[in-house]
Length: 334
Image 1 (cartoon, rainbow, N blue to C red):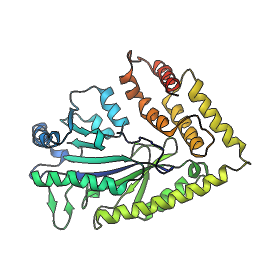
Image 2 (tube, rainbow, N blue to C red):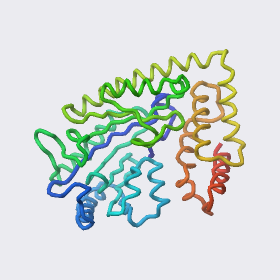
Image 3 (tube, rainbow, N blue to C red):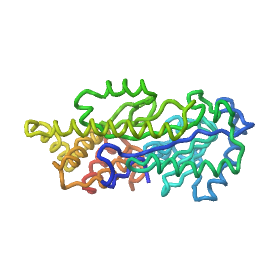
């Protein structure tokens, strides 16, 4: 399971859900003051607990840059994690949607990623993993401040709850900046495709809680669920307006995007994401019936640069070769 595995059953606006907990072991320095020796010690101490419940350990100091970037493309790790030089490892249980970064900014950053809108399910799942850690290790915790974390903005619950939303109508209507400003006023944030510091691509946005101190996990999730419902209603109403018979330009744009995916000889990743957005909207609106959401969602992961190169029998050596390979892969899947 990856960040986005579209079965077509979920909301047309919510692609995936993620709940992430930040935790640290007591009696160890935080990440910025953690020596290589202590980082290795933490990994060796924690890894067996995860391996005993079905996780696979990936030592990021022993894999290629391409492999590391592929895990980033699947949203299992952060960009900072791929660039670390000190010891760090990923514990992965793909069937359950679990990915745990060991020795990133915090000693433990565990997340559960599920398709569609599944905040309650993801939260219940990650709590079980958290209980396993609590029963086996002493976690850094303070009665007044809650869970102690490297960054003060994570103090308290240490939780980030987020949903990946597909909002083409709001994007076309120029309402994203206004929405982002409104969210920031109520303790939520809107980010790009890969979270903090990333840009929005393909009308896909990550919406998550900002406040972790002085609020319970359940209240944070409830607030996010309510806002997602409101945003979905706004997006749905706008889609009704843009699909009127007075908007042939949209139908032409969607049809051209499908033509690019089916017939282009070369496609860059940015061009694919743009076409993906238009085609997915076309499927949601019933304009395109020959491509299903599941296939399109799987393609989104398969043709990202690092993942595409790793899967090739003869890995591309240049960007041009990769763009040609991407077009071939898309045509064969469609």
